[in-house]
Amino acid sequence: MYPVVTLKKGEGRMLKAGGLWVFDNEIAAVAEGVENGGLVFVEDFDGYPMGTGFYNAQSKITVRMLSRRKHTVIDEDFLRERVNAAWEYRKRTVDTSSCRVIFGEADFLPGLVVDKFADVLVVQSLALGIDRMKETILRLLTERLEADGIVLRGIYERSDAKVRRQEGMEPKKGFLSAPFDTKVEIVENGVKYMVDVEEGQKTGFFLDQKYNRAAIHGLCQGADVLDCFTHTGSFALNAGIAGAKSVLGVDASRLAVEQAAQNARLNGLQDVVQFQCEDVFALLPRLEAEGKKYDVIILDPPAFTKSRSSVKNAVKGYREINLRAMKLLKDGGFLATCSCSHFMTYELFTQTIGQAAKNVHKRLRQVEYRTQAPDHPILWAADESYYLKFYIFQVCDQP
Image: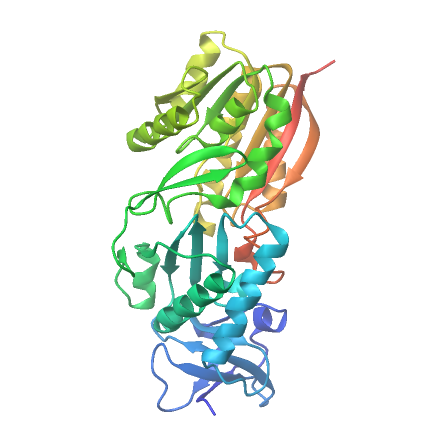
């Protein structure tokens, strides 16, 4: 039905393990007439059927699979089934007032992310093949939400990531509906936020930490809290609403700090939760020199590595901030620390934290380990879908 892409003998290991990607160096032959962004049928070297996906010779990820079934027709009915399955999954697993509705490969719609913020959708399309299906998918999703009584105010596109160029596409952003106010108020864990879907990072707000933010509530009652890399203040505000005595949120972005302060006022927490614009790597040693101590410290940095080649430097960064934070905690205080890079594996992140504790002669008691919220499901064999690692420790002096 579709032109055939044939794998080399012994290749397609990720695909055979359950993944959805075929890389350029795994392909033996491509049938004539295949166009970039078009649909193809993948066969192993011996003709064994592997499934259907979309093709792009400009990308190292040359084929992204949509179905592993033999001779699947990728039409509107197929896409409707995918969209309905994604929404039904969210209804069963998360608070859907604001959530990630479609998470790319983990929802078997590779390259596409759709976030719902109250009554607004934000879409990010990162692969040529799915970009051609984007309009249909969004129409089907809108129809599905309306069937549940959810009337959308509008849709905004945030496909402004540089990785689109690796697919031969230019970054783009803008309205995919009639224009609307792009400052959207949402409520999560009882905290109000003003989400800027036009200018905020990625799609405007990091929904993946939803339940990790709730996990710190019990630790923060009556506590002095330091929230590093606060972005728009989400962890700091959760600490404040949970009854913290004082909260300091720190971020190097002036815009983020201004938005965080606005969110504090929105929640009536401006007297408890304060923010300052500063480089965390410079701030932590200064606070130590000043003799500051905290009951709870939260480390939620941006990804220190976005490639395997920079992992070594990332390890140094994670070790440094965790080491400094442990020294700033009161004996028996709590450290919430995370990494959002899938290149920083669970094993490496765990080892790095352990090295930091050893270097400053602290003992760690693990309270819990968490990953991203269920609306960002981890698809086994698709390593890129498992990216967020989140620990809570009690940090104790050596006895």
